Amino acid sequence: MPGLEDLYREIILDHYRAPRNRGELPVPPARKAEGFNPLCGDEVVLYLDIDADSGVVRDVKIEGQGCSISQASSSMMSAAVKGKPVQDARQLIRAFKALMSIHESKLEGESDGSDLTAELEGVRLGDLEALQGVVKFPVRIKCATLAWNTLQQGLDEREPAEA
Amino acid sequence: MTDVLDVGRIKADFPIFERRVNGKPLVYLDSASSSQKPRAVLDAMEYHARHHYANVHRGIYTIAEESTAAYEGARRKVAKLLNARATSEIVFTKNITEAINLVAYSWARKNLGPGDPVVITAMEHHANIVPWHILAEERGIELRWIPLTDDYRLDLTDLDRLLDGAKLVSVTAMSNVLGTLNDIRLLADAAHAVGARLLVDAAQAVPHLPVDVQAWDADFVGFTGHKMLGPTGIGGLWARAELLEAMPPFLGGGEMITDVRVDGFEPNEVPWKFEAGTMPFVEASGLSAAIDYLSALGMDAVRAHEKSLTEYTLSALEERFEGRLHIHGPRDVEQRGGAISFLFDRIHAHDVAQVLDEDAVCVRASHHCAKPLMRVLGVPATTRASLYVYNDESDADALVESLAKAEKFFAV
Image 1 (cartoon, chains in turn purple, yellow):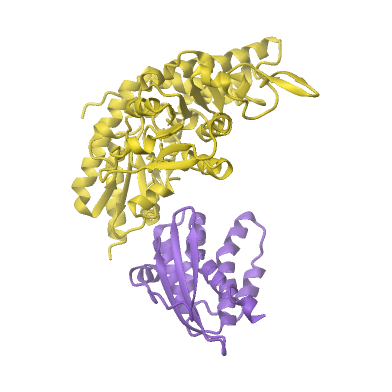
Image 2: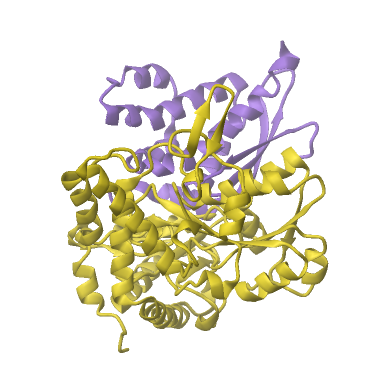
């Protein structure tokens, strides 16, 4: 039976108590994306300022409310993608989702972990790895992935203009 | 505290309390979501399945007759529990959500049209909101909301204006979030004074209070089995016989007809007109046993027990956490039941429930299928502990201790 310390690692509580990049950005030039967890009412409001020329995420701000896992995950996500090219942010999303879902499929006895290895290759998750303990608490996986799904939404919004 | 119920003996009737979670005895405080089952209920269903399992109202062989008798016997028990005028006023459904939808799809579609007002309240469960939203989209009915007072009760100041022209008032007898008990008789009189019908969501009332549909003077009352010690998959609707007679069928299929031709059908008589397809008759036997169990305790005793345990729990929470824990619900136990919603200022409901789980304390952390109410309260979710016949002070004490642990864990 996994204990509370597996879920609430110190770094997670630190991000929860002192969330990074809290606030708003003027829209436009920034864009805004909102994510909701209908089960618990958690919400993440994400502001992304992306440099049109370089494709770099210049600034990220987060608003919203939720549990420690969703708020810490948002905070860590903002720190991880700020200053990174959009391409890297997308790779991080894939890597983080793999980190969350690989254990889900392991429960089903389906995956040998090769998907995760492929997704994680060349990606440095750093602090984000602290969230790995969440997969032992399946109900909370949605809390952890909320911010990342919202980021995906925010990045995708731009695609039609780019194409 | 002297208890009107012998909770030690009651607990021994529920096999699940033999379980340990994390090596600890189960502290089950989520009965407002779904209640645990006594051995008698489990045995009754097994007996039905082993001894006289056969479809009801179809076979003429012995075990089919016995199965039918058990099913109709369950209907009589429900009718007696609710003080219905006749057994035929009880329609079995899957749960209360289906019971409310039955009223929305059958009665309301026949009787309501564009602009007809349906009045509900700010403390309703989604099951008593969404069917009316659907009807608003489909038929253009007007949905009106009775607001709340600061002390979590219905604000009836503007009731006359809200009821003006109303065709239906649909209200919960007890809020699943706040615990608030509503004055159903008062609302029935007000509704009838303007010619409206009254539908009561009694999902939280029937398991916890003596319910008398005639004393309420209601028109429709929905309930569900799994919150009252019974199994999942069975609930029901009580309605005045004359209303059921005049209502068109809801679901079409076997059993709900007297004749089917190539060019049409004749519906069966009530209540079977509304019971299409094979019904959950094994579960009906479980519900029968649940009603026997509750009746043996006595619904007055159940209410008295929960009232004193709610008082004990509220006092314990107030003493231990003072202003740091906000309780969303009336303070006076005369005006409320044992569903207790609370929130620490700076700790999310989910995180609280997670810490409690480590101590095998089972509570609900969510919007409790009452999002409009959450918006009125200005919170995304609450943690809710709900009490029932198998809970005692030791459960309340375990809750308080575990909450103290959560508060410490998340201290900023």
